Image (cartoon, rainbow, N blue to C red; front, top):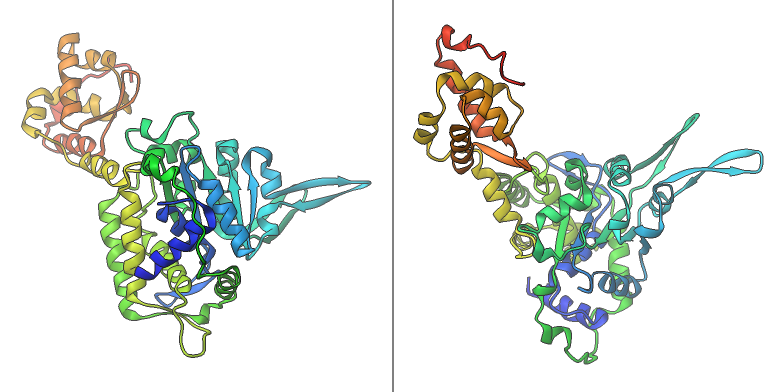
Length: 424
């Protein structure tokens, strides 16, 4: 939308960071998300948005968010390196002769927004322990008894890659997300993931003189709009049937296009993410009725969100689209005739029963090392094997299906092959 370009001009003035529109919008959608709304005649209990920004050092991640927090006069920023799981979620504190629950930063910011900077300072185990609070919006501490409190907190996570290397060192930037966050279910909880690489912005832009101009969207205007979004009830969010159809259409398209191997897009949940972001976009643009009470979510808002996600997923520093294309390609074998020529019936059962393979395993199956090398080389080329470690491979789903199909055409005699010499 052209209107957002006007907002970006203001944000560049406020932050001193230029050509980071993707970052601005990822932050904006989180700030303007609502707590709850109804979609497809069902309540979406977790309507608030979680954004992850991962990128190289000195790319403006922290400066952008800090300056916007100051401009909005809303939100709190904490550093992951200096806070523990107990500091984020809560723990038990000894007070004189008794113990008491002390809630962490996330539940204390219920209904508001918190920024966790330097997430790479958190270990993956602690990120995994936060799974419950992120999915339910309820913080829970269990010792002798269980204590619970609400934690419906909008979250923006900022981080450099966990490994000390730039985004450009990754064949696909999306792999840096996996290294940073860990478990698929913890990655899936983010609604927006933005990457920032040093190469995204030309050097002359970094050194551009900062010329102060008049700001159209003042601190009071921005703050009041965010507070308006935060105060909307589920009955205040109106999603037209046309908008709903578009959300489902785009969710289906993205579910088919992107791999859930790293579940930034998860087919079963993508419609909810798109709905949440569309509501946030409508709130950001103050799409309302004559009363000023409703958030009217229009088709243009889902189109805006869809185009934004497609843009960030294909960013050269992210390449989620290219990685997905490669992963989804593994669901199909290449030259099946070449595979048929190599895989004799007597090899099928041992290969099917093997979870992992190395050259020695294959040699035990086929009888000699040169043939084993040839088989592994061909199977990798034709999309049958995927490398998981030094000289260790696992079968792709397509190859597993192929082997199962081969067993259906085998005789009882062939099925009873003696595999006692095979070490698995």
